[in-house]
Amino acid sequence: MLIRFKKNLEKIAMGLLSFMPEVKKDVKKLQQLIKEYETNPNWHLYLWKEVDDVIGIIGLRMEDDTNVIIQHISVNPSYRNMGIGKRMIIELKGQYQNKYTVLASTEVEDFYKRCKDTELEMEEQ
Image (cartoon, rainbow, N blue to C red):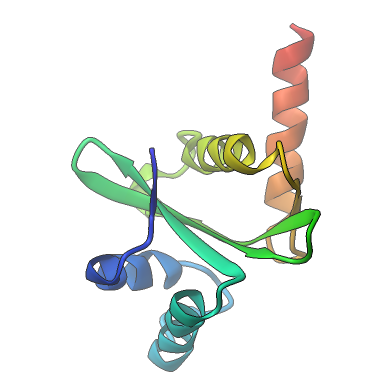
């Protein structure tokens, strides 16, 4: 289940974001990234919670009145290859697709495309 980022989840969010190659445990970059999500009204950060554990994170930016860009996605390594990233994208698309076109930044484009291709395969069966 996606939950909206709150300040009390900052350490968990930073931990999940630190698994992404572009920040790779660079504390200053992580702090700047979190600050941008906290202060920029066009940036939205969600965490993925299963039972009592937060195991994934997905961040987006509102590009204009029609597009939402997924710019960050990360899953705790212990939970990878279980479809968590795909489920985050599906739920996010469900929240935004009535008003916006959901796209991916170049950093997450390959993963997004794989998820989209898998969705199409499932629909054809």
